[in-house]
Length: 331
Image 1 (cartoon, rainbow, N blue to C red):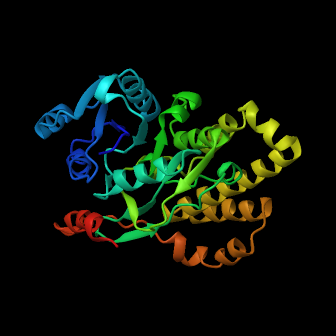
Image 2: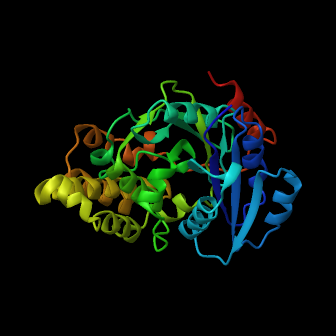
């Protein structure tokens, strides 16, 4: 039996349509020593009825006025840290309400974290799931110190692929409530100043991230002010200058700005804003030249490869069920 109780914090805003699949993936876990805190962030739908229908004492609902995903996660952290006895959490996982886990996700992440007492978190792979049910699998970064790489780009789709030890949560503190985009990226950089990450050896995903037309990423990834706010908050951390020195930190920031410009350009092209998108892509290559990205610029006018337009439409009725089943059959 596990000696590590896992607290799963699930921020939810108008997520009644997606939450059942998320909670079903938790109840199907091979690891049973977990509890879930669903934080209703001022939803207008019947989120409470969804949680009540689960009839599982491990799942509880807490409410707050609408304040955003960071504030919702912080509420869940405070609740979990205040618990004692069998509900005392030794590890945390932040699961988005429209995503779901593979059946062995918690067990694999827990085993990896227990086997690496030096690590602040264990990381697994993830898969993006399209409305048609098609999955695009992505392996986690290699184990070790990820701080330098995280200062350039976010290495994780969200917290659903990370199991974080309690001591690291207590040391890192809370999410920045004033960040509505990239708040998780900023948090991972703080974790990375505390220690190393351990990654699962098996490449099969632990997290399945649902691609949605109305997702926050699609809505905010094209906005330069969002990227600027995240980078400003990341570099306000005084720990970084002591680690890297001013010159190296400036180099890393320029690389991060180039990365942000590339994402803005790519997403604008995918949204149909071709001219503006190309301008951001060229700006990215000028800021931090990359032969690969210089070559990819050729594909941008054709809207091929990473610049393919979003196609959501109406998925086949069984598409999501097929994708959910993948969570249990992937090797």
